[in-house]
Length: 92
Image 1 (spheres, rainbow, N blue to C red):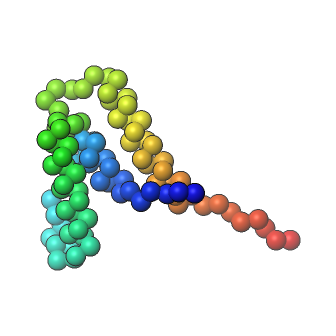
Image 2 (image 1 turned 135 degrees about the vertical axis):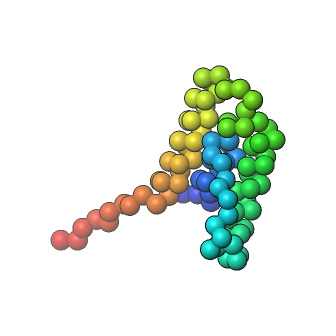
């Protein structure tokens, strides 16, 4: 199987379906956390410039909401499927 490594949080933010919260002060010196946080901020900035989701001037039409919700569900399902437990055949 070909799995693309995508961060669900970044994907949701990039679609305008979520906003970034302020940086956690207890993690502000952690290099990996800062990289992750920077990715979230970049995704949020792009969504805001495109006026997507929560950044829209007016509520989007229902068809856009439905398409965005479907895309969000697809992203989440891909992440879940990646970690789905598949029991091994029992040996008797």
